[in-house]
Length: 253
Image (cartoon, rainbow, N blue to C red):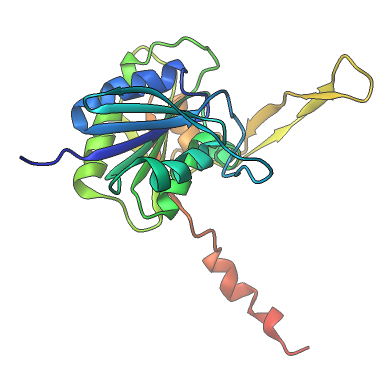
């Protein structure tokens, strides 16, 4: 009997979030699923780890083809713990999401959703992060199910280049017009902190601006045109172009 692929799932919205429950349901036909997700919201956790206190792991569900845990740590903690103390073989795929809120453009640097995917990627596991451009706690994920399964199946069959993971973002639409493999747009946040009710306290808010709204090869443009944006990301953040232009720094001191 052929062994079904093992798929590891996590997120940053918490183990009981609608997005991860819908993702689990979509991927169940593709393999045996192990879900290890935070026990509450961890948005903005990026690739951070818990370093000042122990982390706990609690079994939520164990049925044929599906095991679910809640973890007190970050999304990256969840992946680390899953690989060292939960799964009995290397996952064929790691999937994170579906995040309530997009992780396009520079948002990817703050994303706990992509932090989990990047952690798996650093461990040599093909990884995908899925996000939806919405802040609604309850969403209709059905317009994206076909694309989510299609991308996951493609990666299971063909893999990904070494040290590369996928950041997939969907617009909130009734009908997805297709997929675009593209680059992340340049963008920035401003007006990020405003005074809170108590003196000396501030709360996070902010306004995002895409710095190249007319560029048709970006994730932001794709979502603005009802397309799912598929951005390949590399763990190696070296600016290879700058390697050449900065060689003058090597001048002997």
